[in-house]
Image (tube, rainbow, N blue to C red; front, side, top):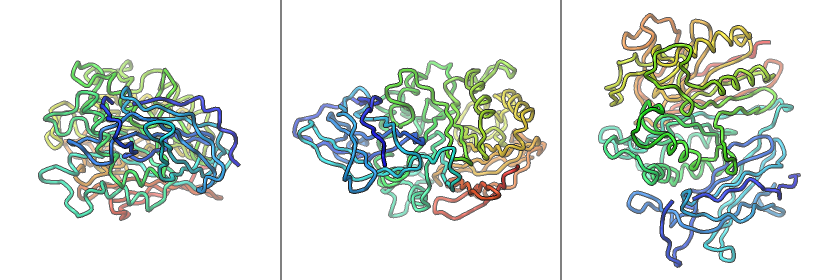
Length: 488
């Protein structure tokens, strides 16, 4: 049975400027989303809109009220509710509520009741989510990891745009993911592209919000998030612009980029005045995941390499090492927005392929970037025997799928771009235009031609717990699979 959740202290009134005539009907045109599920809590989110179709390329929001109703059955015979939330323009007409007091491993059903006023409301469709099983349950779990959801390339690119009749539904991979029935979904960043196309890139709050609206109102997004809870990270394109740090005066500012990200997706308690976006979740007895923050705390990209240059920041690195040591989960998966092994483009190679004009010093695999911090972290991992503790890295950012093995033995799975039109061929070990020209990295897999898709991870219990890493294209064709049996 569901424990009492009437003490819903963590609710928020979130909202973007738009004038509403009294006669306008209130819609929930982007559906609902459950985020940051734990064994006992969830953050629920929706946005009140004027209709469900784009107007001048955007989906306008509207003022109104809403509350979430949560039950243990789809019939809502007995349900608890949040207090009424008011959607206003300050935070894009988004309403969020963190709900505590849930049972581990429980299937919950929820819906939004919304309208212009409390006495004039309608009820939205039934949605659902499952809480994490928690550290005492040795259960099977599966999840998908994605990056590179480039709306412009999918819909409008002159050479690579998607052309099939189902285009208006949105990215085909989202339907494929839903059909595979994962327990949760991880977006590792580049969830939208503020800087694509480069001409007229998004630099204001209104333009940045539009990028989220146009994407999340597509039916395949609504259908997926109606059933699958989410975890979100941000990277350069959904923060400021390509390979950005926090030094430039160019818009959007770091402060605006961080604020819009936290507004648009359910990541932190909406009542938390000092949110931290790096976190770890104990999924069950066998699995724990770490979601790092790669933009907020970094040193300048162009700073000379050395012990003082950091992508994570001192506090995050201390937290990461401490929580890894504290974990007794069988499999420990670090999910990073950017690569730690690669290979990646060399410092000045490959920029024309992606239309950029900056040097490549953005991530932990770049020698002139943050490789020094990566190597210190690897030394710490070895000192604490993590090569024998079933520790693996999953990364976003790169537009190609690969499985790479560092000379020290650490392994990385790069998920590649979700969208075919946003994919490219990668840099294999030994490529003179890569940052591994001497082929020191081993790469059991990379795709043979540019293709969109995602990584699906399945963790299986039993006498020999196993983690299965499967790369799929956007139509669900399995391209490569690696099975890791747990070391003792």
